[in-house]
Length: 303
Ligand code: GLU
Image 1: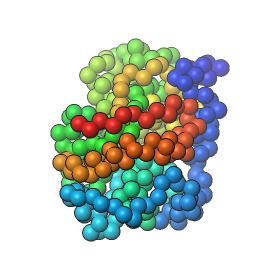
Image 2: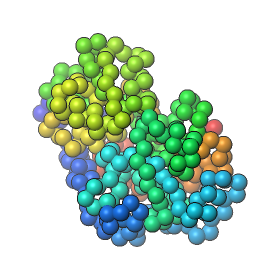
Image 3: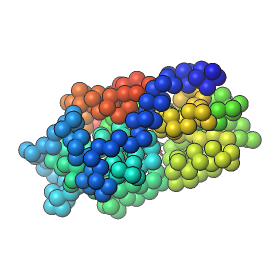
């Protein structure tokens, strides 16, 4: 019962977590196993359509997409409910992935014209600066430091840093992150920086949160910290072994990472987000409706 009480404290119903797991364990949706053409069968159920009358002047990124006939999108692929690749079906699912598909569709690109690239937290800015991808959608917090290198459309979601621990752990909140505790997070992420700057705890870092969760399951670290929205997906995958504790202790505004200075593309995406709250809600319901999270579309920040 203890676990359920703790989950309830962060507003998550255990049944909802199980539903999230089920929903991410791979619905065979016509996935062809390749990187571009899967999910075709589900296209008719999407709450958006591929636009055919796009006018977007002054965006070098869009011009490149049109010329190449494809859009290259950076994502996560190991974050259930957000950015997830089912290795068996080749199907990509999750709120972030669906936001990415929506933006691509508004720009006139369908699933078979998307080239997905899985890029870990630490390499996102560089991938955008290098021009390896056209944009990035994957639990990417808008920060001033990142804005020195890239730009962000959005935010399209707000969450906060949380803690995932073993079901029998005595850690109850971030107040317990003392010097004898080892906390794991992803290299180059805002949560690991927050721990370093403001807590006594020891840190362990990996490229991905999956590696941190493995370390937690092995007992080599005491907690995993990152955005609560990410932790919900992992907790759902291990309902017996892991639990989320405490209240969120940061504010993370998720944005769409874009090449710096492409204001035309940024304005275009911000307008899509602003003018289509029903599409946003439908995507949220489709991907995170069972996660026990309050669906609230944040106001776009046209900085
Ligand atoms: N949202 C945080 C960040 O951008 C943590 C999640 C992540 O690493 O993607 O750093």
